[in-house]
Length: 134
Image (cartoon, rainbow, N blue to C red; front, side, top):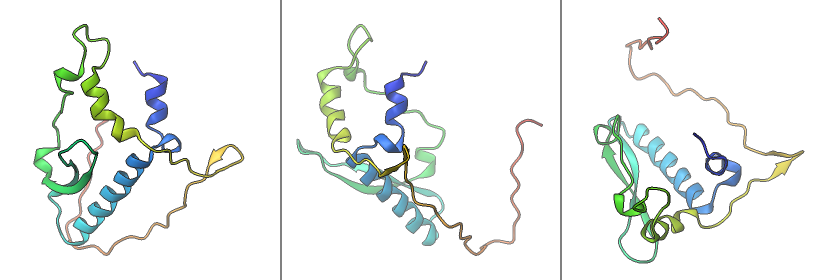
C-alpha cells in the first residue's frame, strides 16, 4: 500500500533543502570515486554526533550495502505499531528541513536537460545483461 504523502515526498518538486544538498553531494562523490578508479565502494552519508544535525560524506564497500535491508529501530515505532515515537520524530525532523522548490513553467517543474557524454571505455570486455523474461 502506498501513502500519497510518501509518494509526493519522493518527488524532486517537493524535496527539502537537506535532502537536495545530500543528494548532490553523494552524486558528486560517486562520480569522483568512479573517475579515481574506485569501483567497489559507494559514498554514504554519515550523521555526526550531537544535538545539532550535521553530516559528512564517507565511503563503504558495496558488499556492506548491496542486497541488504536496514530496518527502522524498534524504539522508533509505538508499541501498537501504528505510529512513530518522539525519538523517531527527533531523528527525522532535521532531515526534512528547508524547502527547495524548483522553478515551474506551465504547471510543470523545470529540470535541466543533461547532455549524454560517454566516458572512454577502459576495458575490452563486453558485458551483456541477461533479460529476466527469458
